[in-house]
Image: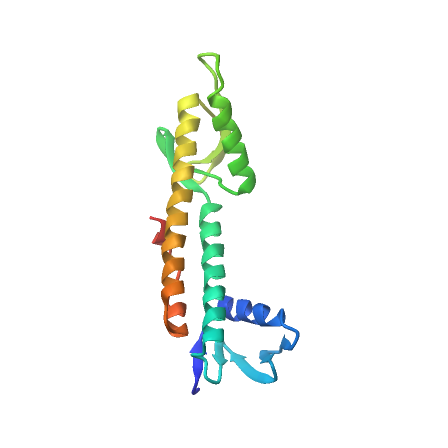
Length: 185
């Protein structure tokens, strides 16, 4: 297909949603119409006349950044490993778990804690068994540091990938920039 740009399904969806915000745009049955111009979407390929134009490039960049942000968020909220209890465990890191961990870590710093202070927190062991395990103050603080380290690595990876997207000169170059499993390693 001449003048075609290969996009991921996520890019196609974001592109369609972006265009759908306009007054003269619609997306239905694999057809994207913008300002009376028809773009056909077939298996993630969008036929775009003159697709190298700056407006489309800006839209593709915005769509890719949104895909990268979503992938970053999924990695952050997908759990993290910590050896705070000795052996490595997976800790949950969805929003509620992050709030609970923050509260537990904060509580562990309160003055005049009894020497045997503990707080329970959910962890998953190597056998994939979840349990509510007691953590001492140093243990919950280490788990908090390990969770925060994942967030910082993910945000640094997102920053680097976003900079690459914004610097890309073509839509093809933009679509080659992806979040990978090791992006936050």
